[in-house]
Length: 274
Image 1: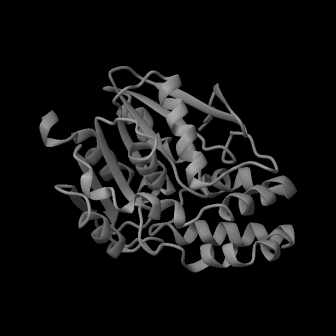
Image 2 (image 1 turned 135 degrees about the horizontal axis):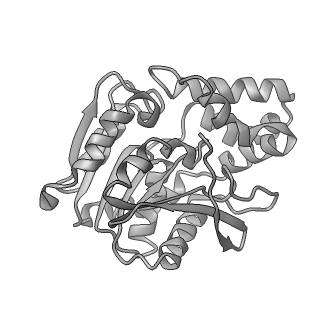
């Protein structure tokens, strides 16, 4: 698929690229790391049959600008999302977020004070103790990872992405996810963004989760090895009246493992919409 984001939004750290599909009530899709809006290639067109769908690549990811000196913290990503919502003149869109996109969406709601109609989080970073595994190693030894030979970096990135899927990637998809991180510049960008994502940026809003009053839906892959099911249960216990749905036989990347089931959940809306 030729996935191109043709629109641009200027931030202090560089250009964020975005695209809009369809017509109807607005919904914004927020990706996580180390991926890009390419994850939404099946979901966005399906939702666009009845909704206006906005997709974008976080600064430092995908087709958005990558360069030294960028602020790629969750705090900065939330400011950029708030700026995009203002640019799009969306006062109360639906928001759907995955992985660190969940933390970005929550910071934008709770600390940047933007309003949503409703919020769907799936296999999402939200709070608690999530600095773990490979991510923690990168945080503790960023200089080591930046010096990896190119072949070793690509093998590590590919293995990390495969670990996120329970069923495996379809032909050509892994290459598309790896493309922004290849070469010397891509490798530097990969570890640049990981080295700035900190648990402190989610701790800042954890005490506010109980005050969320808009409709919230949680969807989780039962076989998620990046953020196992206890992370869904942690979040579910902290947001009043949030729905929790499990997808069996799927891992962290529901967009890859179960795109049809995920789309069905997302297209169904909330009880108040039905």
